[in-house]
Length: 208
Image (cartoon, rainbow, N blue to C red; front, side, top):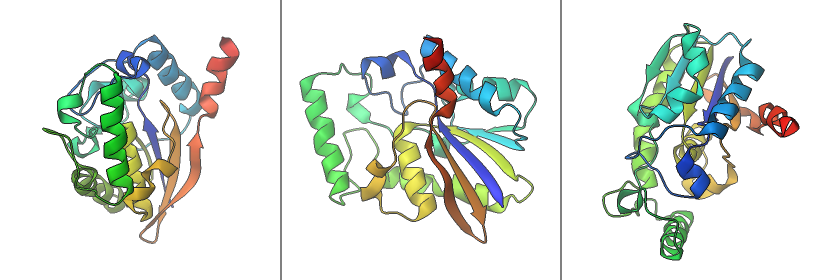
């Protein structure tokens, strides 16, 4: 059975401020994000990963940098990029912004998967571009243990795609920074083995 470790990137300053950073904002990890990345590395550094996949955005690269520095094969896939939030990317976390996002999330939950902000992507757009990463995971048997780092909304869409759930159930997948979903792939089917694991973050809380 192939094992796939899917994690969200570590915290950025915009995450901390509650400001949306989609595909169009290439932000760095903040101090907490770097500490989260280090905690994940210390917990999982002894796993024999055959391959690392990230999005093209540097917050995912930085989250798994120590694995990359260890010489593991690494491939960037634009299909793993975060959803583009269009005109709302980088805007202040105001009541108007929160209202706009609540309305959009309700559209998706109601099944209107093609709804999107001006200049942005719909969850259906992201679902379609994530089919290529899914096919790569399914078609490379030599990569038995894989680490994949991506983004919150895109990760929720990807988990729906991999497990055959409708996009209206995206909210069933919590996605704090560096949270882990471990999946198995066998006989043409993806199954979740470890759901929303954050055990690596315990050491951060213990250190505070």
